[in-house]
Length: 226
Image 1 (cartoon, rainbow, N blue to C red):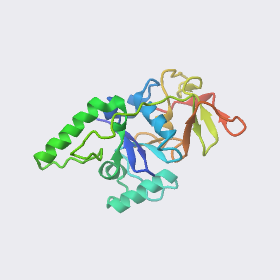
Image 2 (tube, rainbow, N blue to C red):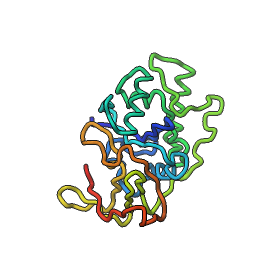
Image 3 (cartoon, one colour):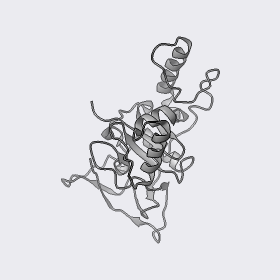
Image 4 (cartoon, rainbow, N blue to C red):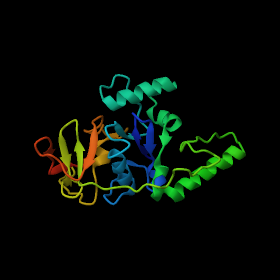
């Protein structure tokens, strides 16, 4: 069936689910530049998630105890606290807050999920639905579906002091083929079973419409590592 991914913030204990944005959640299904989930993510990186550690986290790889990566170390410690050492994805699903519903574009899908949760609460079964959106059952849509995503000219890696432009940087794969309609950010921040961790994983990222070329090096080409 393949590995499924969410965007997670290990500092805030929050996540975004591609399914809520009506996308598939395999790593290649959310790479398009015209992508509402990435727009939501970039808006968060400019506001609530600014300066935090984020991961494009797959559900089939355990978090190693001895990792030196800043983001993975935080997630591993959280998994220990939860009682599932190394079980990063389960820890996220069971203890993090899904904030996808903050964005207007998710309204239809998130309302369906909230309806299922409320029905389960009224008529309990053996399956225990998680209140992942942290809703108040008496006012379930309070604060939801109000925000717009946002695009930026530059994705800036504060840790490595480099940046790229989704619109003008050339993205190419190992065969030399270019991918002009895709954004490699998920691959740069990936942690999953199929491929090695992304080369930006654990770094602090921000977004902007300009950058200081005295501080940051512009990447005119980025490897699209499937």
